[in-house]
Image 1 (tube, rainbow, N blue to C red):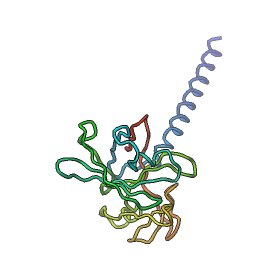
Image 2: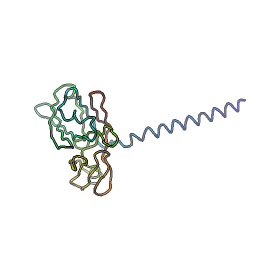
Image 3: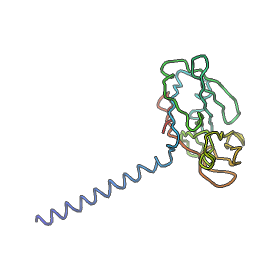
Length: 194
């Protein structure tokens, strides 16, 4: 009887170990796509910037994306955004203490791209620099520009174009896909991080 109980306990322990291992492996798969090469931490409260703010306007609209760059002017942070579908540029002043928290980081060279994929309707964020040039040439200044009605991002350095909806190379030499960051819209607050 004790042998049977011990055997059952050993089988259960092995089964438990297998289940835990499977959960560990599958939980890491989503994180594998997230780049940790360059620090990214960004928070934007859409309730403080209602429409017609274009960054607020693109969120939740499939196929709509914005580049986001941060700078300082007259003691305030400002966000410089450019929409993908029409190239419209907007400067958003960040004037509240809530938003002017230290520690904002926008990837490799102070530039990220945020929007909702028209393929799977998921909010996504990419680094605003060419992943292949970052990897191949060093440095951090390989900005991507909108092309083909905002559905692709083009690198002038290597000639690659990336599909904005999934980050893969759509034209040019094969290579790495865009560096991706975590993105979430928690109520009115947009968060991008890694």
